[in-house]
Length: 502
Ligand code: SF4
Image (cartoon, rainbow, N blue to C red; front, side, top):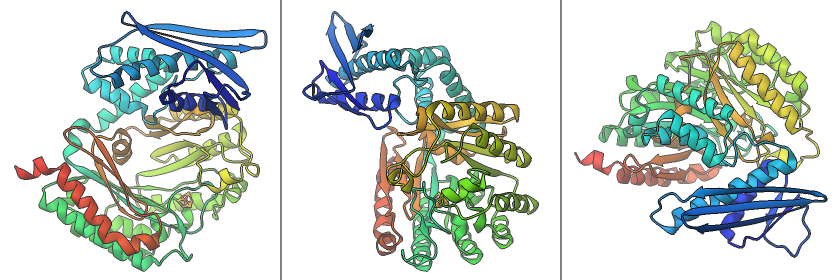
C-alpha cells in the first residue's frame, strides 16, 4: 500500500506520518514523491499565524471526499524544535483523523506511536497535572480514546499501590541477567536464544563470563552503597542450564550482590516447561526465588508444533502442578494472541485451560511480526487472524481476566503489532511483578548482565536514558565480557557520581 502525501516537503514529517500509516495498513509505504502512482493520495497543509496552528488534510477517493481541519493555540515554546513538535502534532492529528474517516477504522491510541503510554501519564502526574487535566491532554493532544485512558489510569494506580516509592527508586538499580540458551529455537523468536546443544560457544565459558560480571558489578554496587530493587533472569530460558549450574549461579548472586535481603523480587523465567525438573525447582527454593514464569503460549498442540516449541500441552500443565506442589506460589504464564492458525475459538480454549491453573499473573501478548523471526521471513506459511478477530480475542482476554479477579498492571505497545493493540500484564492484586513495572516505566537503571542483555541507564537527576547492549552471540560475549563490564562501570561512575561523593 503506497500513500502519497501532497503538500509537505519537510522530511521530518515523513517518519511520524509513516508510523501513522502503518497503524492502518500492513506493509505500507509513505512518500512525498508525487511523481509516482499511489493507492491513496492525502493532501496536507498547515500554517502558524497569530498564535494559531492551522492544519488540514484531504483525501479524494472517487466520488468521496474526506476532509479534516483543526485550529490549535500555539503553546509557549523556547526554541524552534519545540514549535515543530506542536506543528507535527497538528499535522498528525488531521492525518490520523482523515484516514479514520476514509477507512472507517478508529485508532484507540490516536496517533500516539510510542511504546510506553503509561510512562507518559506518570510524567504528567509527576509534573503536577491533576488526573483530569492529564486525561484531557491525552485526549486532546494524541486523540487517545476514553477507554484506553481509563486503562492507563488503572494501571498507573495499581503500580503506585504496589510500589508507593516508585518515583524515588532512581537511586537504586535493578538487574537483568540474560541466559542465551533454549532447548530449541521457536519460530517467532527474536531473542538471543541458541539451541543449548548447538555450536554457538559452550555453556561453560558463557557461565564463566557471567559469574565474572555478577562479581564485578556486585562489588561496584557494594562499594558505592547502591541497593538492588529487583533481579530478573531471562533469555533464552534460564532453566535450560543444569541444576548444578543454576545452584552455583545463584550462590554467586547472593555472595556478590549488596544487601540481598532487601531485594524486593527475584524472578527466573522457566518459560519452556520442558526445562523444568524437581532438582531445578529445589534449587529455586533453596535460593528463595520469588517468582517463576512457565509459558504455555497456547494450549493447542498443533500451534505449539507449528511455532517450533518442542513440548506438549500436557507437559505445561504437569510442570505447573509440579512447581505448585514444590512451593512455588508466584507463577506467571504468558499467552500469545494471534498465533498461526488460531482464532477466537482456539484462544477461548486457551483461556478455559488457564482457568484450571489460575497462575498469579498472566501476560497477554499480541503476536508481532518482528523483523528477524522465522515467521516474518515466511509470512505465507504462517496464516494469522485478521485485525477484527485479533481485537475480538483481545476483548475476550480483557473480560476473562476481569471476571477471574485479575487486574492490569503494565502495558506496552509494539511496532508492527497486529491490529495496533497492546501487550498487557495482568495479575491477581498484590502479585504484580515489580521488575516488569520498573522496566516499563523507566524510573531507574536496569543493568544487563550476560548474553544479549541490554542495560538501560536512567540518569537519577535528569531522567535521561542511555542504552548499552552486551553482545548477542555467546562466542562474542565469551571473548569480550571484561570489556563490556568495564564499560558499564564507567557509565555507572558517571551517573551516580554525585551520590558517590557525599
Ligand atoms: S523459549 Fe522463548 S527465548 Fe527460547 S526460543 Fe522460544 S521464544 Fe525464544
